[in-house]
Image 1 (cartoon, one colour):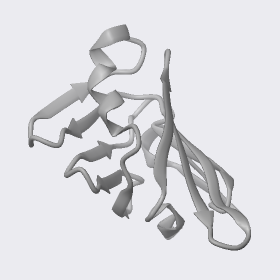
Image 2 (cartoon, helix red, strand yellow):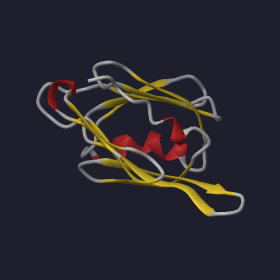
Image 3 (cartoon, rainbow, N blue to C red):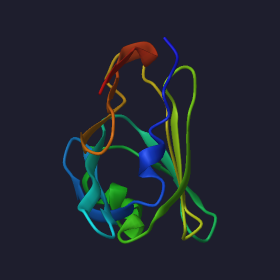
Length: 133
């Protein structure tokens, strides 16, 4: 199955960040005349990499409490580019210079995307993908 890149996320701003055993990023973008263009949530369930605005890389692991704090710096940043690899890896670039990278896990769901204005995406163990529109 060919991976569809959810390009609708470009121009979206991070409106909320929450974490427990997952890291959840609420992304939104308004249409000038019609309200929400995108109102979506990206859920990350496996360790991931984050390059902060100063260029320092952090390996973050959901479920580890305050160690995921560097992800809070994504609040109110805007997605400027994204890529989805053939295996289901996800890379998001932000206007702050930050970069987030999630790669598939051999045992667990890596990431999912759902909401208004985006395709529904599930990247499961080993990069298995399910896309719905």
